[in-house]
Length: 139
Image 1 (cartoon, helix red, strand yellow):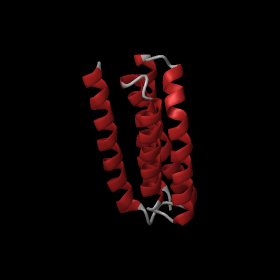
Image 2 (image 1 turned 45 degrees about the vertical axis):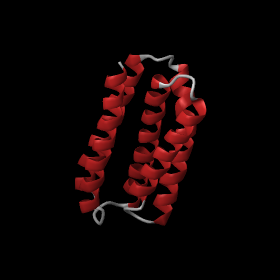
Image 3 (image 1 turned 135 degrees about the horizontal axis):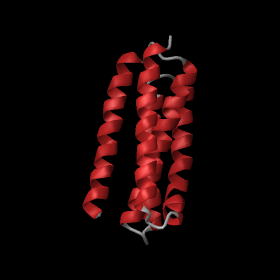
């Protein structure tokens, strides 16, 4: 189980990098509102996935998992928000911070449920795909 969860962490990192480079090419075509949603989904989604997976891997290390998930959320939200403008960067930063703080609590409440992790991973993956699809049609 540990190897599988570690591979999910790396899969999320690779997915975020792919989405970032895809959106980087289209950043001039993406409107302000979609940019805010992208920054919030990236920061919040990666923070909550990281926190839930890490609290499942290391169940009694709340402080370390919280710090790592907060840093992941802040970094992802800021990087994706920086594609657009400073206000979007700030929105991604704050959303990543808040989701990173909440993620270990959600993961601990899920009590190591693999079904919860799979469904959460699936939702975030689908949301990233939807954002990539809708970034084509906005002006």
